[in-house]
Length: 606
Image 1 (cartoon, rainbow, N blue to C red):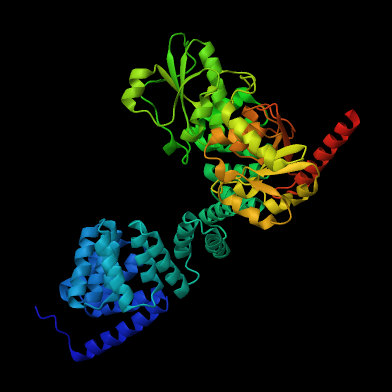
Image 2: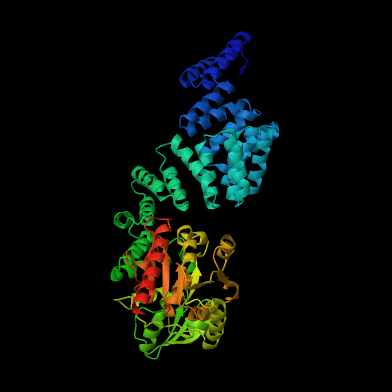
């Protein structure tokens, strides 16, 4: 059968096709469809009309019909690269990524510089898991059309999936420069910048998405999360609330809302939201852990300690814990048994909770303690500790030596009631080291009547270090107090701040001579008072029974309780709390008042 048509209908078809494509490009899809239909009335297998009819079907969510139309077109025009590329897109919609890749390769064979085909082939290869080849074709598409934001975005996706985050960020930034309002690009870029702790840049991305898409629950959540990381809790709260309203089953948003409220010491509101998150997702470990700390802060130990166990199952905590190859102690009788106390978290935590060794020993157990190496010699002085391990024991050694093990911070759970189960002091400095330090301190102090140790900065990696640490210059008013010799126990990056007070405060820097906690303990024994922010030194001084004044943020760690000026853990401690988060003026004023009161009391008694 002859399918040729005469010149007149051919001219009419060309005119109809041009008109249909014009409507198609302008988004007048109904008009375009009418023109394509008219063409097919004149020539039922006209490939261009079949092709673009198929494109319309694909856009209308009918990839099966699109495939039928385009296959009819390909039967008439098997060498049409654009048709092959679009048929490949249809194959992707139908879930046949191998066929999609084959079709895009055919299109590229016919038109090697066809940028869309290279991009589409990259998409198919991404689905097939061939990231390296996908990257090659995305790069080719980008080189052919460097002004395409979409191509830059797709190359960024491939690089991100390959774990090459900095390169991915560069591509997403290029994409944003070409199209600043593409929310998909902004979301990917913002998440990578958040992961890289580039919080200000990430916030800008999420802020823009929220402007463009006010109903985007994920963007609200991410923006709240970044504000959290920047300690902008007041600003985070409405975005968490909005995310939870837009996605009522989002327990994570409600949990994070509770966390932000906790950071602002709005504990009652926080508790309500932690409980709401648990109603939504009863097994979620994060709100259980956070609620546990909130209850412990209030002194609600019976309810708090069991929930505190969920520190081991949170997303961030789980990788740090493992089951040891003997039974985990659940409170069984220990007479004649051997138990290993296992280290966890920071040195301060180990100092605080190793006190329970004495109770274990009274139950008849041989108690070994695995602790941080720098703490080993001091832990050997703790009543009840038979042996100290300063390195992780092998599984075989554990199974041979021990009947039970227990994480050090899980010990209070096994001894209900008040959290104090050790007389203070329960750690002791080496007498020889202490004598040597006393001689040195006396020489440096001269006629000063009181020797005071000072720590102003904690671990800069701590989530709340911004609030826990105090700039040394903020403590300068203490320099004017008479009769005191000051010793900087400070170690780490914070020690560099001593240069900031040069000539204004005589502060004897001895931190570099403190090589472990045993030497720090020996120094503390030679002092009359330690003033410190919430660091391991606070725990060490407390465990040694030395007077220690602890400087706390308005929302401090749970172990310091709520509102109190003393510590249930360390009888020798006195607590000075901020009244406003981040503002140390009231704390310094409290210290000055405490010194003045002591001087007045001394004068009255003298």
